[in-house]
Length: 224
Image (cartoon, rainbow, N blue to C red; front, side, top):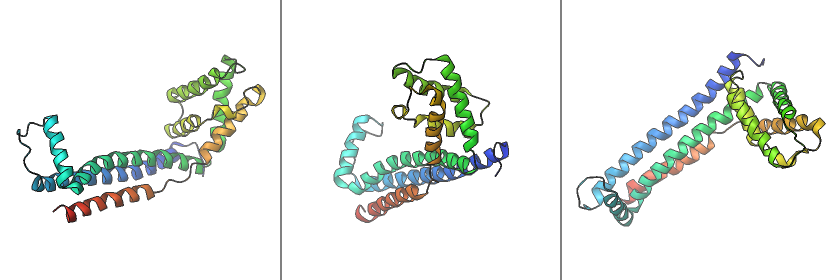
């Protein structure tokens, strides 16, 4: 497939976004539903804590303690729904990131990325003495990341792949004394990192969803 066109970038990014949005929407909505169910079940099982419904931190704390004591599965459902919501969101954003990078690389973008990396590294080597001590190694990495962040001429999906590769760059595994081949060595390592991004799976989502729904069933059965 021909790379470098806006159409290809849009298709790859759109596919990744749809998958991430599906996970995000399903997970967040299901978490809200189970949280509401947990509140409803808890209302029917926990005695009045007193003090009115003013939402004070003390009242909420006492209510949670009673909940854990009297209806532990409901408490697990409530707290688990909040944790699950955060995890669903993390899985969704991870899906967008890795699906984009994988799709971009599968589209045959290796040469394009190599050219871009060599250009960036070469420009920084002219500005700094990379034969210096290790502090400058880390600075190169940070400078390159900042450069990519501000590079508006690079398509977003390509920028995302490059930034991912540079974040994973292991500066201690590069021979910084070999200035002649420094750019090529960095390029090779970043290319390797990006190429090893496997096609993301929906498995983490389904595992999380299964655990979540198991908590819901347990609360409905054991804490009636």
